[in-house]
Image 1 (cartoon, rainbow, N blue to C red):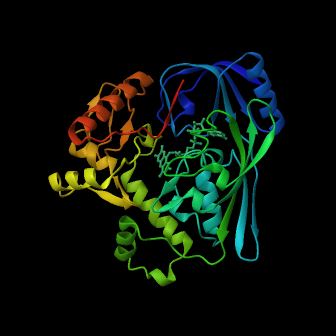
Image 2: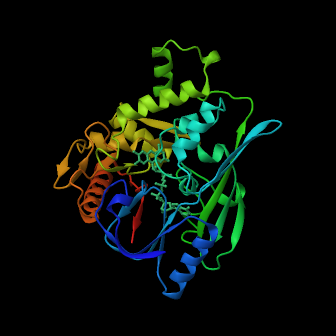
Image 3: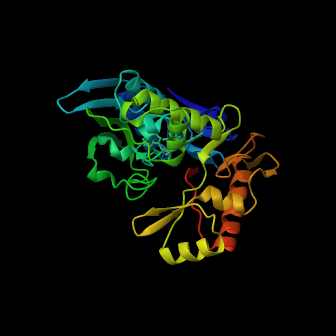
Length: 338
Ligand SMILES: Cc1cc2nc3c(=O)[nH]c(=O)nc-3n(C[C@H](O)[C@H](O)[C@H](O)COP(=O)(O)OP(=O)(O)OC[C@H]3O[C@@H](n4cnc5c(N)ncnc54)[C@H](O)[C@@H]3O)c2cc1C
């Protein structure tokens, strides 16, 4: 079951060339437990892998990559909601399509996000005004140290903007095996996001008669026009989180750059990282195998399918430049390994 010296290039959407000392594709909880026993016996670090769309391989991985390929999906209508139980290895976008094709709303804003269901809670995926935590009920995860299964409710997960307990206090301690969602029976479209509104107005759609599948189609069309497909131009989506700053910094930046793109976030302001990178002149830049996408400055690309070092250097240079020019720290969104 455990393979050795495996090429990870086909397993990450940045197409970074790197090797893993060991690799296991697990299709059952027993196989997952066995893989953990193997890693423990050899004292190997573990990289739980979904679709590889939110990782940056900075070099060869000296441990065990566990590709979580647990399958199973159930959708049930209840009195006031639809409940979904999905195994970690199911594809996220296919789940969204299964719901909207059945007339069930709630996930449509999260259409076309690459990756597997098991990774969705890790960074609390979000898009177009909706986050996973808005639809989340609970999850089941296997403790890496013991192989025991534990249940986590919403409060246990500390969800925040592109963040959860699994990136913080419980980092590297659990492998998510199942995610349970709850979607409301009475659906209300969430289309306040400017790009979505423009699309709906442009198509002469009435907000009152929108269907989940229409909103999904709008999101798919908007995303397809803006984001490069990883199969064509290797990338990991947004490379940096949108930085959250206090009102003083926001106001001084806005005074200097009246066209600054920013959104109120409670008492703080979330700045559009893509705008900062674009304004600093990085959009469209190419440096050997890597670069910055020409239409979307937040997306770093690896068209030359090079090693991770070049991309990491580019990301560092961009972050330093943004700090120098705007006094703002950019934090990468994907996780770096090893
Ligand atoms: C073109 C593009 C567009 C994107 N758009 C968005 C977007 O709009 N919004 C958004 O939030 N994200 C977006 N992303 C990022 C990415 O798709 C999501 O973060 C997704 O949830 C990652 O899923 P994955 O299966 O590929 O995870 P992977 O890249 O395989 O893993 C990501 C992290 O989760 C861990 N992990 C994976 N599976 C498990 C598991 N079962 N248990 C424990 N840990 C696990 C990994 O170890 C790693 O640390 C985009 C990426 C791309 C390439």
